[in-house]
Length: 332
Ligand code: HAH
Image 1 (cartoon, helix red, strand yellow):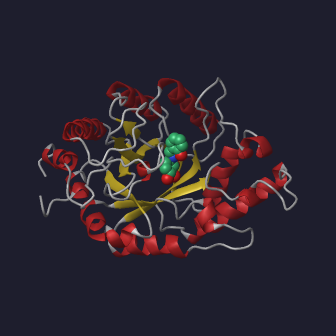
Image 2 (image 1 turned 90 degrees about the vertical axis):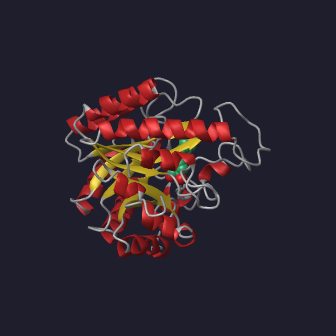
């Protein structure tokens, strides 16, 4: 166990990644190096981090993460170029607070994508070019967003072309959540099919994989993998975690994880990875959205201030039963 490596154990099938940030590459450095062979910057490559003001880019924190990865032989994904969240308001509104017209928006998008993707050209193996563009409810495929409203439906195609112009070697992904929900799955399928039919350079679908103990449905995960794979694109699980809370649970006062739930979580992780290995011919990487339970985005989401334990290492950076399960089931 001490010397085992999750990434080495699953190397016959796919890369195993983790979301890291400028703090965890130090505080969780040894764990990352031992167990993962791909990383994603949790926030440091988002629009608001790299391009807070129109006239300047700040690559320092993102570059530190890339340097960490490169120096340890770890590959890096890029996340994310075009999204409606964590994007500064100057992108959408001019100095007077007026919505920018299409031509200005496309100019900003092009400038941003060219600068960022060229900065990391041949160092980043894939990009989440567009994140979360599909609507959760209603019949519409695309989510209402400033990108859609001010550019129009072709904003995704434009984004993929700008990325392709900047690095024609990186794999270009569309990334989304609730991607195994049958209704949203069909919307994502139709969106990516349309882009492919138009000849847009889109190479993969990123399935975020933010699951909950009581709603995770292996049949739905399998159906989504099959459906997306039928488009002939590559697949990745890009942001995997399994919350210990049920979907409708709003309690905030849980101090330590329930051992029964940790055991169930291990079962679900085990089943998921077993399924993923069956898709190795199309699945290039499985990335956890964090390293250890002491630093994870679900501590504040969707219930502010609530502690969660969704990852493979506990708060003391020790392997959880889930990690042991993943190693045992492939005889690592
Ligand atoms: C993901 N969204 C984002 O892709 C990632 O960049 C962020 O750090 C965490 C999770 C998931 C999500 C959301 O933003 C809103 C509602 C549901 C799920």
